[in-house]
Length: 187
Image 1 (cartoon, rainbow, N blue to C red):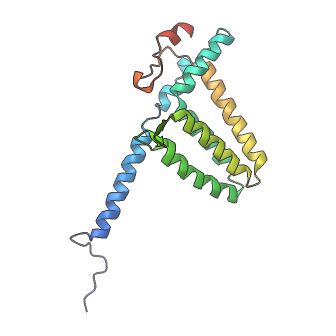
Image 2 (image 1 turned 135 degrees about the horizontal axis):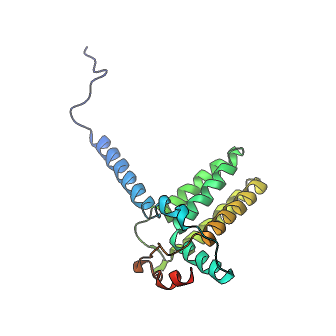
């Protein structure tokens, strides 16, 4: 009897090939999906933070930065929410399941979401997923942690968006958003 312990097979079985193909495709999808977020270095550029000149200027920056850094802001709020649930294992399990839905419906989609023959805007998906996440997590009895985490996340996003200037940011016209020409004047 010969043993093959420690040997590497010369060829892969069809099931192994399918598994490797699936893993490679998933890895590519994750990299491509997370690639749609803006660079963290650009988002956290310290030279781009200035006090807004007034309330209208702060709202203009908030609106522009919320559109521009929307994926980054979602990641930040979800990370804060995740950290707040570390001491609630049931809530953390539910959160991980909901994160799988976030990944497939928001972060890793390369095609527009179509429901009943209509294209669903990314902002609608973002709002629906956020409400769904908070609602499902509230059912796990970690209410205080969840509400505090969402409030902290919202404050972080609003403060960043209001103080981050927009002169060095440009939105693609493909995104359906205005270019920075008008926003730069307001900053």
